[in-house]
Image (cartoon, rainbow, N blue to C red; front, side):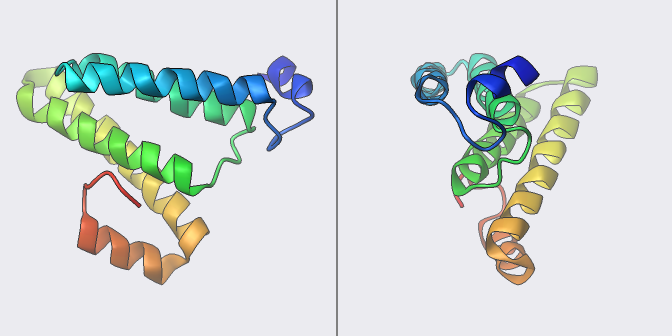
Length: 128
């Protein structure tokens, strides 16, 4: 956490190598998704979001984060639809949490009215 942030000059200022870590996880996530491995795709996606939070100090409010959160919500919803019992409930909860954070990021980046309108029109689609 803090050691990583000190290396990049503080929250909100990623080092070029940090950007490479995001960029290296994205193709892994895409490959898992293409192979139908939603669990693997969700795992890599969670690592991307966690890395953005750690490196950027939790102040990450960008269209890029919005895209990752929308995709995370959509993938978790797909996994939940195919699951049963406690796993299904957990995945539904995680999708709802991603959706709540997505709405927050959209609200900060775009304004409350635009974010609400986008949420209504696009629902669980994975774009901003």
